[in-house]
Image 1 (cartoon, rainbow, N blue to C red):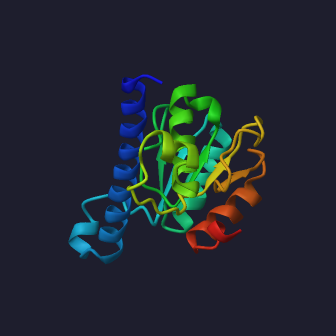
Image 2: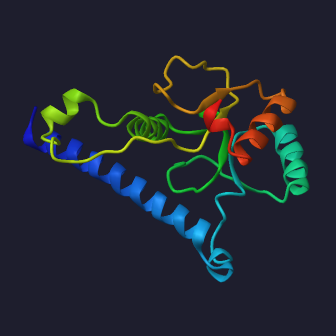
Length: 180
């Protein structure tokens, strides 16, 4: 493997670690911040990320979210990495292959840490990694789960099964979906 490829991989690990650290810092600020600070940004504890093309589901979610004083962030394509949310609803066909790959690598890294081979190959023996969990995703496409990272908090649901989607969102909002 070339030195530049090795450097790219190490930079990727460091970028993922940086994103994870920043996310945790941001989450702590939301949870412990003053009301004035919380008013300046999206409260990830009440925000649902959504990226799909289903007008009926969108309308139902908007109405339902108002009942629980939740916000929805609808995105058209692009990366999921910069958004803060307690749960997401996505159709993977709305992402580029590269964006979805970056996100699943991030989820895999957060859930499982770097592989033993990567630690040795890229000289990461002295770097401390903590595993954890990312916000759960409800995946409503029909591609299946065969490419999901191990331990990923992904839930595959038919887009017409609004009752199950609502239950998963409520469980996540109350903190129970991560343990499901």
